[in-house]
Image (cartoon, rainbow, N blue to C red; front, side):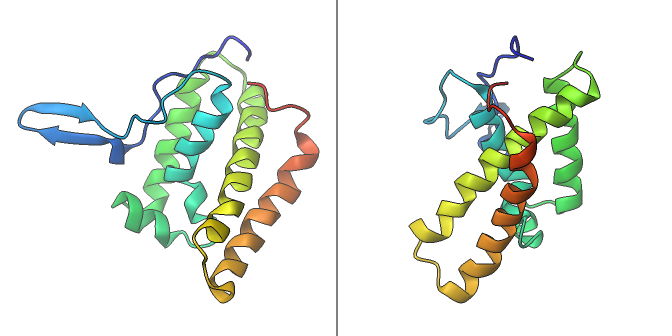
Length: 140
């Protein structure tokens, strides 16, 4: 839906308790624009990083990847509250596509050895192959 706006997406690792206050941290990339990019970054924290190794989500978030997938589903449906399920599915395709494209560059930027990079690149490539035919535009 074009009237959906994103300005405050974060994941649980962006919350810190200081005394009796909850603080939001790592807000250096906060911006305004097409929400697909913020949503993809949030998706990566909850689901995307686990495309090739679901346990990497467990290690990063500190909770089981099944639970983070459930939380992502709650987040995305709350974000698109009032939209029909087809709109949510279409938005999720866009989010997964942007997520996979971003994650494709990660092993390259980190000089990941080829034997470790290949399963990641294969997993992200498969997501791109699956979602790209269904995405006409990245606008949300």
